[in-house]
Length: 437
Image (tube, one colour):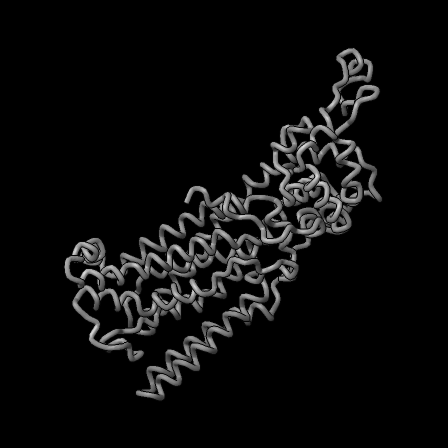
């Protein structure tokens, strides 16, 4: 999955005001339409001819000017930066620093290769000249006024606790009842948990930006499948390798098809640390974006932050795994739970920042791979198809039934982690995450 970086693009271009969230966001929205139109014009064949090559000042003229400075166009020549500056005049006038302009340009697809057409080594160098040459409405506000991070809000903090509480209540109700009553309790509890998770993913750090379009790439179905496999997949695979299953699941751990409740309880309880970790990433990234002097410097500072937040979440998830297994009296499947939780957390981080294609592809691939394992075992029972079940049976014999989801979810999480480290280190990825937290 090394090509995942090319899969993803924000589903809708952030407006210039959102891109300006890198600096302070105020006023950059006025230049959004001009920026989008200019980007399209730059991509049109022949646009380079209309702009022309940037004129250079002869050495004697530069010396007479008293040293290096912005290159003045030759008489009759065309200054391409001046043309670009004119197109984005409102954005440049209201920008509080060059990084705000650079983030807006990057959000609309302007790359270092595009900047090279204007005789600049990168986007930030081009943004610096645009910022320096365009008169602005007033002085930039002090940095301290622009680094005010949103504080956690009580509503989303409580919402993230609700799925775990409802899941714990459902598991308790199922274990205290029997027969049809247990099935009704399980169905009602499952519906309540789904609604609670949906509410938790609509507000706060785990919710997408209010102006973002959900896009065509949806991940809910594959996420539900991965969670269902966490509860039923390992026992199904174990029974299939042993020649079963001999019956349908009855919601208990002692039935012919046991249900593992500990992974579900762990993952629903993990909504709270996931939200806090996402909030930590968003606030720290915005602060570093304000303090950075260039896009490369910002990327170099955000990548360790992302890795640290991911490790912090895995630590909280490991603690919840041990707690849930101890309370429910089940085996703590660290490999499966940690890899699945890490995969879902990384996918949600990318979706929150507007990148939905790669999470949809990776979650779909992981779900299909998990479904393929028991299907291969069942297919091996057909005449002449014994070879289909050999790889899965060998893996189950060596690592147990949890080895399949561990390999599948672990590989998928690693691919998303590499992709997120490259995607979420862009300034434009954090320009639209200024919703109230």
